[in-house]
Image 1 (tube, rainbow, N blue to C red):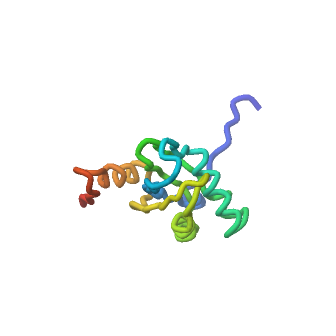
Image 2: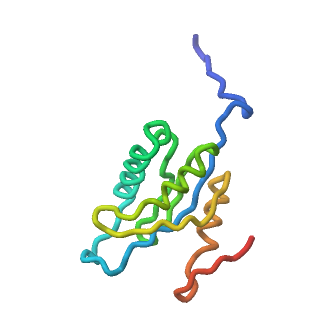
Image 3: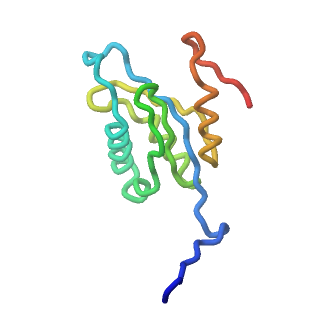
Length: 134
C-alpha cells in the first residue's frame, strides 16, 4: 500500500482545546531565595495534584505547552470540557518542592496565539501589573 495516507478526523469530531495563560507567584520570604522553580518541577506537581483530585482521565487531558522559568509565566493546554476543573486545580497548588507558590490565571483562549496575547498584556509596568484590553 504505497502512498497510503490516513485522513485526520473532521473538525466536527475533534475535541476542542483551550489554552490557559497563568503567572506563577513564588513567595519571596522563603529560605531558598536563590532556587528557581523549573518547568519540570511545576508540571510534576500539577500532574500529581490532578491524579490525586480527579484521577487518570483528567491527567491525560492536561499538557504544559510553554513555561518561562525566569518570569514564571506559562500556558497549559486542556480540553474544553475540563477547563473549569483545570482552573480549580491551578488555584489549589500552594507548594512545589518546598517553595510556597500561588498561581494566577491570566486568561483562557482557544488558540495559542490568543493566549500569548494574554501574557503580553499582563506584563509588569514599573512594578505594577496592568491589564490592557484588546
